[in-house]
Amino acid sequence: MSYDHVPELPDHFPPLVGARDCAILRVGPQRRFPCSGRYPGLRGAPDYRVRCWHEAVLVLAAHEAGHIEAFRSHRSAVRQLARGKSVRIARDSELSCERRALSALRRFRREHRCATTSGR
Image 1 (cartoon, rainbow, N blue to C red):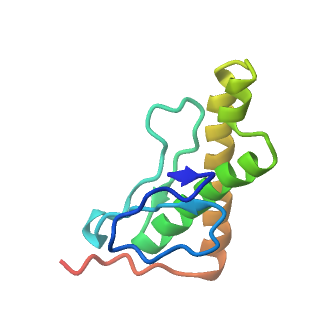
Image 2 (image 1 turned 45 degrees about the vertical axis):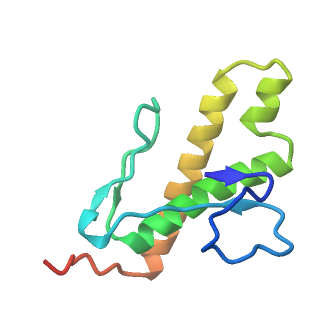
Image 3 (image 1 turned 90 degrees about the vertical axis):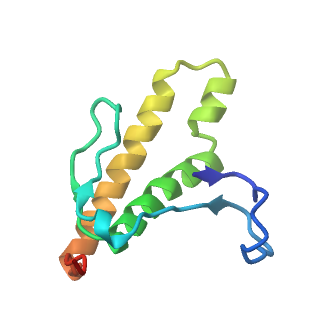
């Protein structure tokens, strides 16, 4: 989840001094990989596999960075909805972020290999 402000964080989080934006990424344990990276319920979303937690962090970060970039450039779905634009804008925003994530994953895979063993 990305924010246009620094949200209240649990006490065990380090202080985010000077932070302008914040994205909190949660990735499951290695045993959950590989898994589908498809955005559930989003029609038109790309279908891909996430091989390991490293790829999951990358995909999530790229997706959330898309939202932060859109918010900074005043193209975010939230801002568009506030201006009375259609709900389609929100879906398009998610699709755009998903495509960005898949593009980042493809670039990553050209240069890196994930260890796909789960230690079982």
